[in-house]
Image (cartoon, rainbow, N blue to C red):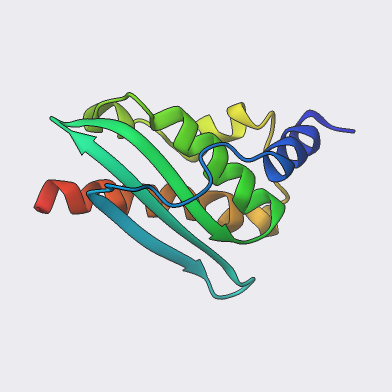
Length: 123
């Protein structure tokens, strides 16, 4: 089994930060119409720092795993630090990249996370 597949299965079976976030002050929803993945990212941001990040999702294993590792990575980081999070870092955290047709499944939580963070900057 590849490192990527093992990491995806681990995060799919035991996702970190899954569930609603009480007291969230920033959030965004995202969907991939082609495959049906849906994700909601909720953040608690205080003084420009992401204190907590959680997600709810109805999606494939790649989408769930990506949401798990991205919310884990941003917890405790500043909004400025969060801006360096790119798909290449998500690939590293998961031990590889998905098949080309599944890249959008991986990037959906990241894109949704960015939009959630942007809502806090405009509030």
